[in-house]
Image (cartoon, rainbow, N blue to C red; front, side, top):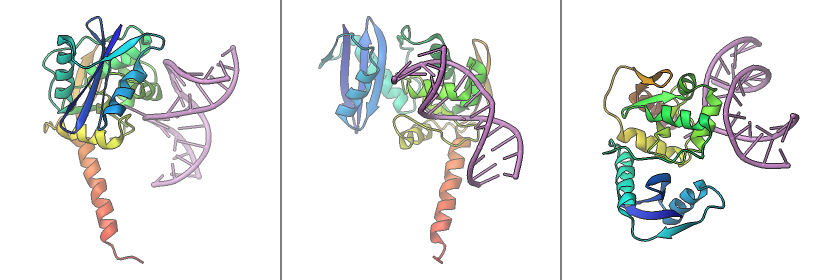
Length: 209
DNA sequence: TGCAAACCATAAC
DNA sequence: GTTATGGTTTGCA
């Protein structure tokens, strides 16, 4: 039996789905119902589940990790994610994405180089990521450092990235199972966004013609 | 810049 | 099987 829990903190609702001391899926949203529906959407069909009010000890630690990552912090300990039902390729992509450190981002094509497949295929896996933001798909952007997409909405992607800004200056290559993954400071993305905002502002202040 | 074509794993027929 | 569809990239005007 899969157990689903929903819990709020501040303005945000979090949801987790657990089974056998493993996390099956997580989600977060501004609305309770949306958060609950999102996790349930990730659950395998035809497997019974129930929504419970009081989180088990395991669920509580899952919430704790989830909230820490949402706040831009390192999770205190590694959570066991249930990935068995996913394709081998999806598992590899998610595992690779997990290696992007806080304060850094990578790109769809860089992840594709490290995990195999092509950039679009990587985007597809990200779109179906049941573990956001624990598997930090928000740290994957387009190769020109523009945002790309995000299931929870781009505002959320930006908010997460801002919270993770650590002031790194140099790119970094992190070791993954097969080779290396190129990562860049989040600031590359944030600076680009700010520059874009300036352009808009300048255009707005220009007299109409 | 902007558009078109190539790209690659899935989901849907 | 085949086709359609993306959280993309690259090349070429």
